[in-house]
Image (cartoon, rainbow, N blue to C red; front, side, top):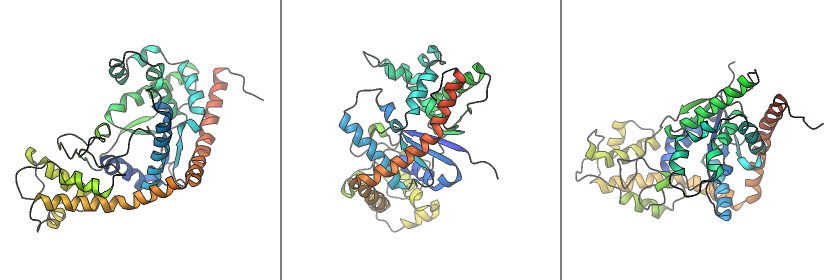
Length: 336
């Protein structure tokens, strides 16, 4: 039997997951989690590269973990944990720092973009790609699912792994591959169907549907979704019908029906108003069990902590021996 591929996914605890995240990625992770060895890491240390309100960061970290579990990440199948609970990440980052040329970090596109907008640049903003590289290679990850904007960071992880292997004449680190996330559903903004639904714009009312939005808020957003001046409910390649396509696409992604069946479901609709309400009601019902499970986890701190402690223990069992062996290779004396 072929060895299962190892996959590492890091998620920053900043803001709620929206419907595009769920339909485009998270739902597929849940469906396919038994096919590979998956590590889902809440990368709270990465959040510290910009100032954070401590209480809010703690809440968002626990909230994101609870939401991933509520979406169906099974802690008995996948490893889900908080990054700062596994000290090998921070410890190993220092070791990787000592073999990583400064120029590699200064050329990173996101660092150049973000630092240009700040008067004072924190060291963590420059260095976090090394931490990210460690996140990946300390688990011998074969694959890292990322968006196009994060591909350069995985390429840096590849460079660091290869540099370590070359410096110490070893094949110690697996060289990971970036996997550009397959879009299960390309969900566009409800207020502008020409742009993807975005986490950075999710607080803008009417743009995104967040997984924890109340039913009334979901209905409000869909009723105000941008459409064209027509009435015919069908899929179309015409740019002006992007809004209707987006609504039909959301309905199709959730139901799994083909385009003909989707159009048939709305054959008796009186216009776009019926379409908007129909899709909103479907989304509300789809999110209802996720929201209920999320509330259970957030209300039961002991159970959430138990699940996260279990995940951290699993992660430590893999990453700490890796970092310890890395120290030995580099010439450090290990404790007796």
